[in-house]
Length: 154
Image (tube, rainbow, N blue to C red):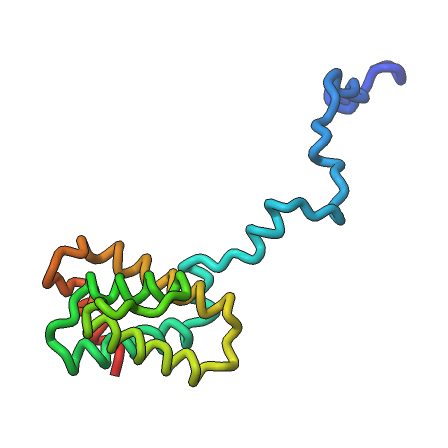
């Protein structure tokens, strides 16, 4: 072997890449874009279940407690109540008395949980409503969601 020849074929220097690296690798990490801010403030079902289980339990307790007292409460009633609470509206004068009763119970729990921010409370309402809609077709008299959640609420 001559001293000019490399011992291993791969020990020769590699040529530089002929193409440029993508710019996104070098973006300033300190810059916060609007979509990132919105994403960071978003509380989805998974994060609510993980980080704010107590809020979800309070909401479900109010719903199930009244459903146990009044057999006429079904999944559609629960969805209507959660929709009103999410929009920040009170039931109208012509609203179903069951909707009014569950809404009042939910508002009482909200007042009791004054330590919870409005953002987290709204995310909790949204999470429970998504759960209702996932487990029920909202047909009149259907109670799939209520039967699902009842064993978890004492």
